Length: 240
Image (spheres, rainbow, N blue to C red):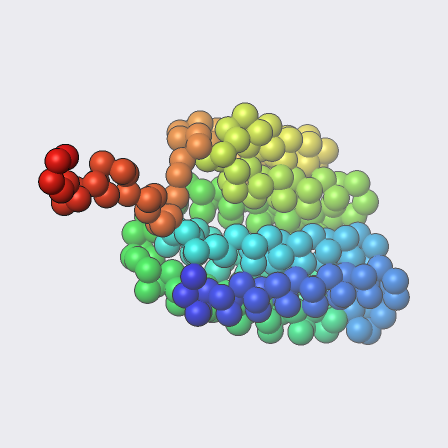
């Protein structure tokens, strides 16, 4: 792992811990200037903890075998979570935002050095579009109240999880996509944006998830040990 990726991993872990502390503060203190005087501190506190978990997972995903595509996705996760947290926890999220922005910046620079960022975006534009629709769900969930809001937030997390696991568990990714897209769209059927977003999620997501080869190995992983046949070349001596 490069030094820059190591710093991104550690900084992201710190951001996750600071974000978790902000979420706990919001749940414990309720409506307070430290968290932006939010009218629904319980729901937003849970969302803040989810965003902190996203930062932690992004940090854990920064491994030596991380491809350019994955580094770009990790950088995006850091940056998006950093900004969204400011809308859910206010000033209490600021330390986590600073750390997450730093981690995202380092991961992004690492992606640019390891390969073509433009090529990575071109290869992953359907996943990017699906992630954008998930962000729409998240934003609508944050503005909604009660059960509908929780369904929007949970749906966004489920769809993003489906993208993340699509090459390792295809059936699970399909289930996560449908479970994430349908309930919020049905509950807010009177709206135009939400049902349309849900339909687009399924229309774009199912072909994307079904086309991902299950069990794909990372092409940047360290090479396996040479075979004994290769090692044996040049070792033949007298009597062999």
